[in-house]
Amino acid sequence: MSADGRWAGRSPKKDEVRASVWADLITQGVAVGPTVSTIPNFVGAEMAAWRITQLDAWKRAKTVKCNPDPPQIPLRLQALYQGKLLFCPVPELVKDFPYIKLDPDKLARKGVTFELAATHQGYMEHGERIEFEDVPALDFCICGSVAVSRSGGRTGKGAGFADLETGIFRELGTIGADTPIVTTVHSVQLVPDEMMVMEPHDSPLDYIATESELIATGNTMTRPPGVAWDRVQPDQFASIPFLSTLRHRMIARVRS
Image (cartoon, rainbow, N blue to C red; front, side):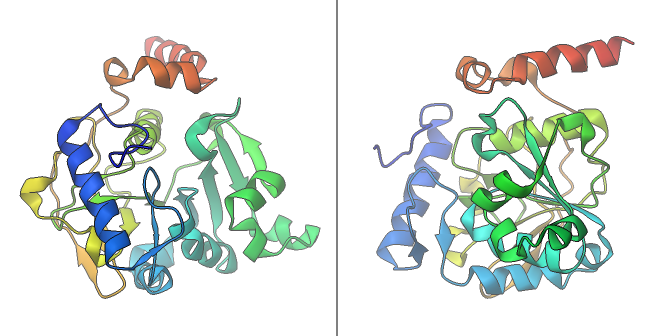
């Protein structure tokens, strides 16, 4: 596999940033498990998660969306223990259904431990399969990141899944202008603002938590109003089974 990652080629400048961060995580000994082409797990992920849970917006939140990757397991676990409804995407959106709903009360009645349900294998087995349109208004959104800047710039592993999800939710009204979007990373994953390329379909971050600090980005960049369908790649339509159908449903929704 190329050091630039599995999805390299869509944005050469972002490819360079990702490759540099993945290499730094490995050479500095703070990566946990596979790194290249992933949202990398890291030493101190639990502390970064704890910093997020200290936010007033987290404490108020009843509905939380979280990405499926290993470094965010502590946040998914805390959401369940704190009685929040948790919504997680199917990894890489490759199934014929896009989302999983986790209700902590239902899990407890079924005898499913929160520790199991917080893993992507666990929530795929024990969660409720739902469509994008079935996700209620979200109070708090967590996304995975490979590299971030203090001003709120972000890049994932290069596949575009997070921006696609966020665009869909914005178009549906599930995510509003004031819905916090946050991430947890190792401080090695912080890069200078000038290295982070932000495109019109990218959603900036409101908070970044690392093992050593919580960063309020203060980002005032205009949030994209929906999906930039012209930016969706042919391989995304080919590999995400429901995407074409969802596009038709959303276009019909707008026209009606």
